[in-house]
Length: 244
Image (cartoon, rainbow, N blue to C red):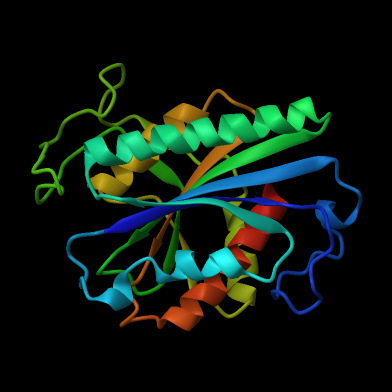
């Protein structure tokens, strides 16, 4: 199984020991008028172990995060399939649009991030995916039995077409590594459901200056234990909130 959730950051100063991200000169500590809303989805690759320790524990526990920079909005269990993920992505996009509209109605500017997590059984560290590709080439069928082979996700573009994350990921990665988490940039999210989700997400946010998308691949818990992944996720969220 997999899960999706959303949260938004606030401009209130966080507890001093909440994360290792230095926000002394960050917008959130300088009366920044922007509210940053992050809407997230988690998916599990079929080649990783399926024991409970690889489930969405990180995301579930973040519901009770002590940080005041973000508040979890929603949590959903989703399937690892093209059709299923598209439906959940549509709901996340709607939630982001509603957040932006609500902030606008309140007279506040806002920005939103669609943040996606995928558990990869071959990952040795945390990968911030910079690029989504217009190709679905599933090595095994998804949970609904769909197994496209070298098909375009969007018929309007060739399979070599790529969409890129708008955020300064090199800076984000450097901050995460400074916190002691092994984080890398990657331009190859595979061609399975993770890339399918990412390409559709980037398509949804590409023309919106107040929205962005990011996919993050994480290792299973038998490679990097759950507490370390929780710490990574918190540091990532803090850094992304500052980067929006």
